Length: 169
Image (tube, rainbow, N blue to C red):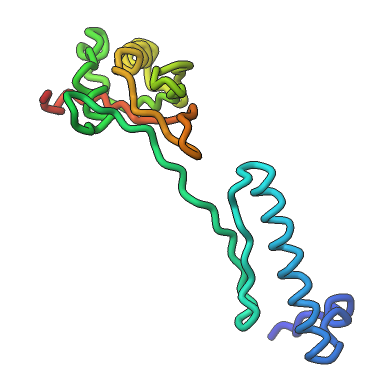
Protein backbone atom coordinates (compact mmCIF):
# COMPACT_ATOMS: atom_id res chain seq x y z
CA UNK A 1 0.00 0.00 0.00
CA UNK A 2 1.35 3.42 -0.95
CA UNK A 3 1.50 6.39 1.36
CA UNK A 4 -1.08 9.17 0.94
CA UNK A 5 0.13 12.13 -1.15
CA UNK A 6 1.81 14.93 0.72
CA UNK A 7 -0.34 17.96 1.50
CA UNK A 8 0.37 21.18 -0.30
CA UNK A 9 0.35 23.90 2.36
CA UNK A 10 0.75 26.71 -0.17
CA UNK A 11 -2.54 25.70 -1.84
CA UNK A 12 -4.43 25.14 1.40
CA UNK A 13 -3.50 28.59 2.62
CA UNK A 14 -5.32 30.15 -0.32
CA UNK A 15 -8.62 28.60 0.66
CA UNK A 16 -8.48 28.59 4.46
CA UNK A 17 -10.38 31.85 4.78
CA UNK A 18 -14.07 32.04 5.54
CA UNK A 19 -16.64 30.98 2.97
CA UNK A 20 -17.72 34.56 2.37
CA UNK A 21 -14.11 35.60 1.71
CA UNK A 22 -13.69 32.73 -0.77
CA UNK A 23 -16.98 33.66 -2.45
CA UNK A 24 -15.89 37.29 -2.71
CA UNK A 25 -12.60 36.17 -4.22
CA UNK A 26 -14.50 34.05 -6.77
CA UNK A 27 -16.65 37.04 -7.70
CA UNK A 28 -13.56 39.20 -8.14
CA UNK A 29 -11.91 36.55 -10.33
CA UNK A 30 -15.04 36.20 -12.45
CA UNK A 31 -15.35 39.94 -12.92
CA UNK A 32 -11.67 40.24 -13.84
CA UNK A 33 -12.04 37.43 -16.40
CA UNK A 34 -15.11 39.10 -17.91
CA UNK A 35 -13.31 42.43 -18.04
CA UNK A 36 -10.31 40.85 -19.74
CA UNK A 37 -12.48 38.97 -22.26
CA UNK A 38 -14.56 42.03 -23.08
CA UNK A 39 -11.50 44.25 -23.53
CA UNK A 40 -9.93 41.68 -25.89
CA UNK A 41 -13.17 41.32 -27.81
CA UNK A 42 -13.71 45.06 -28.03
CA UNK A 43 -10.21 45.50 -29.29
CA UNK A 44 -10.83 42.88 -32.00
CA UNK A 45 -14.49 43.44 -32.85
CA UNK A 46 -15.87 46.48 -31.02
CA UNK A 47 -19.29 44.76 -30.95
CA UNK A 48 -18.99 42.17 -28.17
CA UNK A 49 -20.61 42.59 -24.77
CA UNK A 50 -19.59 40.96 -21.49
CA UNK A 51 -22.45 40.03 -19.18
CA UNK A 52 -22.40 38.66 -15.64
CA UNK A 53 -25.52 37.25 -14.01
CA UNK A 54 -25.39 38.41 -10.40
CA UNK A 55 -27.68 35.60 -9.19
CA UNK A 56 -25.70 32.69 -10.58
CA UNK A 57 -22.32 34.43 -10.88
CA UNK A 58 -22.03 33.09 -14.43
CA UNK A 59 -20.27 35.17 -17.04
CA UNK A 60 -20.74 35.25 -20.77
CA UNK A 61 -19.20 37.05 -23.68
CA UNK A 62 -21.80 37.84 -26.31
CA UNK A 63 -20.61 38.56 -29.84
CA UNK A 64 -23.06 38.95 -32.69
CA UNK A 65 -22.46 36.52 -35.55
CA UNK A 66 -21.13 38.25 -38.64
CA UNK A 67 -23.22 37.68 -41.75
CA UNK A 68 -21.59 36.10 -44.78
CA UNK A 69 -21.55 37.55 -48.27
CA UNK A 70 -24.11 35.96 -50.59
CA UNK A 71 -23.67 34.79 -54.15
CA UNK A 72 -26.67 35.58 -56.37
CA UNK A 73 -27.05 34.13 -59.85
CA UNK A 74 -30.13 34.81 -61.99
CA UNK A 75 -31.93 36.46 -59.09
CA UNK A 76 -31.53 33.71 -56.50
CA UNK A 77 -28.98 32.89 -53.81
CA UNK A 78 -26.74 29.93 -54.61
CA UNK A 79 -24.22 27.86 -52.67
CA UNK A 80 -20.68 29.16 -53.22
CA UNK A 81 -19.12 25.71 -52.93
CA UNK A 82 -21.47 24.26 -55.59
CA UNK A 83 -20.59 27.04 -58.03
CA UNK A 84 -16.87 26.47 -57.43
CA UNK A 85 -17.29 22.70 -57.93
CA UNK A 86 -19.13 23.35 -61.22
CA UNK A 87 -16.31 25.61 -62.47
CA UNK A 88 -13.59 23.21 -61.32
CA UNK A 89 -11.45 21.51 -63.96
CA UNK A 90 -9.88 18.35 -62.51
CA UNK A 91 -6.18 18.33 -63.50
CA UNK A 92 -5.34 15.49 -65.89
CA UNK A 93 -2.24 14.43 -63.92
CA UNK A 94 -4.33 14.19 -60.72
CA UNK A 95 -6.94 12.09 -62.55
CA UNK A 96 -4.29 9.73 -63.86
CA UNK A 97 -2.83 9.39 -60.37
CA UNK A 98 -6.39 8.93 -59.01
CA UNK A 99 -5.61 11.66 -56.47
CA UNK A 100 -8.49 12.72 -54.25
CA UNK A 101 -8.50 15.31 -51.50
CA UNK A 102 -9.53 18.84 -50.46
CA UNK A 103 -8.05 22.27 -50.94
CA UNK A 104 -9.09 25.14 -48.67
CA UNK A 105 -9.13 28.54 -50.38
CA UNK A 106 -9.32 31.83 -48.46
CA UNK A 107 -10.36 35.00 -50.23
CA UNK A 108 -11.74 38.47 -49.60
CA UNK A 109 -15.08 39.71 -50.89
CA UNK A 110 -14.65 43.46 -51.34
CA UNK A 111 -17.26 46.11 -50.61
CA UNK A 112 -18.12 46.01 -54.33
CA UNK A 113 -18.60 42.21 -54.23
CA UNK A 114 -15.46 41.27 -56.18
CA UNK A 115 -13.25 38.33 -55.20
CA UNK A 116 -9.72 39.42 -54.26
CA UNK A 117 -6.65 38.03 -52.53
CA UNK A 118 -7.52 34.39 -53.22
CA UNK A 119 -4.88 32.15 -51.65
CA UNK A 120 -4.38 28.56 -50.58
CA UNK A 121 -5.18 28.14 -46.88
CA UNK A 122 -4.45 24.41 -46.99
CA UNK A 123 -3.21 22.70 -50.11
CA UNK A 124 -3.46 19.20 -51.51
CA UNK A 125 -1.33 18.99 -54.68
CA UNK A 126 0.16 21.90 -56.62
CA UNK A 127 -1.89 21.18 -59.76
CA UNK A 128 -5.12 20.79 -57.73
CA UNK A 129 -4.32 23.94 -55.75
CA UNK A 130 -3.95 25.92 -59.01
CA UNK A 131 -7.21 24.49 -60.40
CA UNK A 132 -9.08 25.42 -57.21
CA UNK A 133 -7.67 28.97 -57.31
CA UNK A 134 -8.78 29.34 -60.94
CA UNK A 135 -12.31 28.19 -60.05
CA UNK A 136 -12.54 30.67 -57.16
CA UNK A 137 -11.24 33.54 -59.27
CA UNK A 138 -14.01 32.82 -61.83
CA UNK A 139 -16.77 33.47 -59.27
CA UNK A 140 -19.24 36.21 -60.18
CA UNK A 141 -19.72 39.22 -57.93
CA UNK A 142 -21.13 38.61 -54.47
CA UNK A 143 -23.72 40.60 -52.57
CA UNK A 144 -21.37 42.08 -49.94
CA UNK A 145 -21.95 42.15 -46.19
CA UNK A 146 -23.67 45.28 -44.89
CA UNK A 147 -22.60 46.91 -41.64
CA UNK A 148 -24.57 49.94 -40.47
CA UNK A 149 -26.11 50.15 -43.93
CA UNK A 150 -22.81 50.28 -45.83
CA UNK A 151 -21.15 47.42 -47.73
CA UNK A 152 -17.88 46.20 -46.21
CA UNK A 153 -15.16 43.76 -47.20
CA UNK A 154 -15.26 40.32 -45.58
CA UNK A 155 -13.27 37.12 -45.72
CA UNK A 156 -14.32 33.59 -46.61
CA UNK A 157 -12.61 30.21 -46.56
CA UNK A 158 -14.18 27.46 -48.63
CA UNK A 159 -13.33 23.79 -49.19
CA UNK A 160 -12.86 22.57 -52.75
CA UNK A 161 -13.23 18.80 -53.04
CA UNK A 162 -11.34 16.77 -55.60
CA UNK A 163 -13.09 13.44 -55.95
CA UNK A 164 -13.30 11.16 -58.96
CA UNK A 165 -16.79 9.99 -57.91
CA UNK A 166 -18.43 13.42 -57.52
CA UNK A 167 -21.21 13.87 -60.09
CA UNK A 168 -21.12 17.17 -61.96
CA UNK A 169 -24.37 19.15 -61.85
